[in-house]
Structures are given as C-alpha cells and as structure tokens.
Image 1 (cartoon, rainbow, N blue to C red):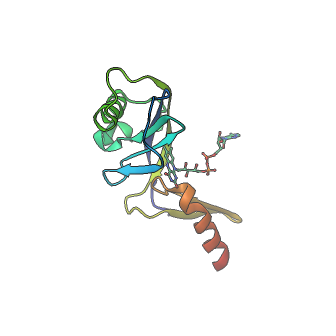
Image 2: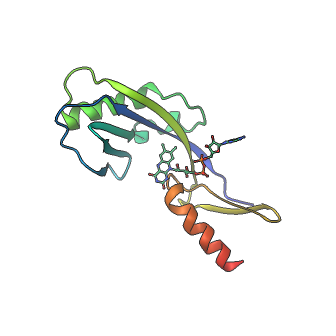
Image 3: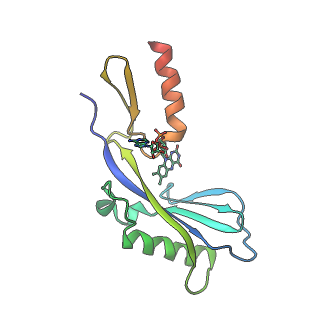
Length: 137
Ligand SMILES: Cc1cc2nc3c(=O)[nH]c(=O)nc-3n(C[C@H](O)[C@H](O)[C@H](O)COP(=O)(O)OP(=O)(O)OC[C@H]3O[C@@H](n4cnc5c(N)ncnc54)[C@H](O)[C@@H]3O)c2cc1C
C-alpha cells in the first residue's frame, strides 16, 4: 500500500510593473516557505503556507485571505512597496505531501508507474525518479 499523499495548496501572486526594481534572480526565504523572483520589472511571489497550514490542506484553488494577506505584508516589508500593491495575477495550485517527506513510487496496475507526493518538488524530482525507476526495471 502506497504512503498517503496529502494536498497542500500553493498560492502565487505577480505585481504590476514596479519602477526601478533592483531584484534580479530567484530567491527563497524562511526554509523555502516563501519564494520570489523578478519577471521583468514585476515581482512573482509565492508561498506563506506556514502561516496557515490547516487551511492549505485542501484541493480547493481559491487563494485563502490569510495567505493573501501574508504575501502582501511580505511585499510591503521586504520590497518597501508603499501603499496598496497592485497585483496583476494571482493563482494557486495543489502540491502533494507525504509524512516522511519522501516521494511515493507506486504501480497501481501492471505497466503503469506513478511518481507522486514530491512535497512541492515535482518538476525537479520526477525526471530523476523516472530515470532511476527505468534503470531498475
Ligand atoms: C504553487 C506550486 C509551486 C511549485 N513549485 C515547485 C518548485 O519550485 N519546484 C518543483 O520542482 N516543483 C514545484 N511544484 C510542483 C510541480 O509544479 C508539479 O510537480 C508538476 O507540475 C507536475 O507535473 P505534471 O506534468 O505531472 O502535472 P501538471 O503540471 O499538473 O500537468 C497536468 C496537465 O494535465 C492537464 N489535465 C488534467 N486533467 C486533464 C484531463 N482530464 N484532460 C486533459 N488534460 C488534463 C492539466 O490541465 C495540466 O495541464 C510546484 C507546484 C505548485 C502547485
């Protein structure tokens, strides 16, 4: 029986263009609970699940007000964005988490292989998992 995979919602926002944005590159903060990068002269900021784990244990895609507020506060405190921040895009997605922080490799039926529960690192991990799995088959 494969280890259970729990959903955790990840929420993202993108600001309108900000004049003289000095930020260039990808960054993370607080053990990766916050992550941000520039998209041209906009800021893409995501995370803040650690401010409200219980509400984020869901497959619902509505951005929760607690998370939205935490992301806005982060923008104002860390990028010194004064006043109301104009947000051009906002969305969320669902990640799969396991209790042991290890991904789940599962063969639900003969010939079908499933790698899931990558704890928010599915892009990075799944090609490696697939390659390793093929090598041991
Ligand atoms: C907020 C957030 C942040 C993340 N950050 C990272 C990160 O920093 N690093 C990292 O490695 N991973 C990260 N991930 C995880 C990563 O995005 C996923 O592991 C990866 O996208 C999974 O790829 P996939 O192709 O399996 O599924 P998806 O990318 O979800 O693609 C599935 C596609 O199938 C389509 N689809 C679904 N059902 C149907 C249907 N019935 N018919 C037709 N089409 C359908 C969907 O529309 C979608 O386009 C993050 C995920 C989220 C939500």
